[in-house]
Image (cartoon, rainbow, N blue to C red):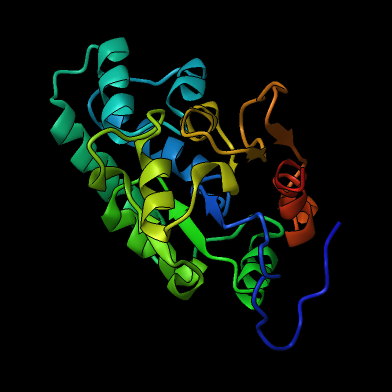
Length: 235
């Protein structure tokens, strides 16, 4: 389902229904979900607690404050949310020091969007400090807008992050395709009114109206993304 990428950049066809592509970061574009869990396990081990695997499905894709509060509650650790959040971010930052592996198809998709002049936004629940580190691997030039979890009042699963990205791009949410990998992110995008492409990472996402599930980003290209919106606007 991949398309060839031209040698020179071209603009989208006049009147193209797709205005922008909004992409999640962890698990969607970069292979970092395992690293986040490793960081959480290490930090709570230092506090004298063992995290059960069952907790992983709850915290995956979630904002730092929600994940930290949940893990404190289930373990009974005597630590505040701000402090454990600081320790989690520091531990994770150590793990991604250097190059971060991209998911299959991520580099090609970003290159294709840039080549065709389709604006892309990076929208994550991860804090800005971590996002900027990961952007060194993703290429900050590939994104017209980046939204970090600590830059919005209400992060995922609230729609604010995706609504903010669309607004900054001057785009209508229903004409922006979101690419996500977790239920938390999918809820955020769908509540914002965006059609969603789901590339499940560690948890299964059930089919639903306005939601397209694929095996990996290798299955996603620009004609495919345009097809998710164009039929609605050709009536």
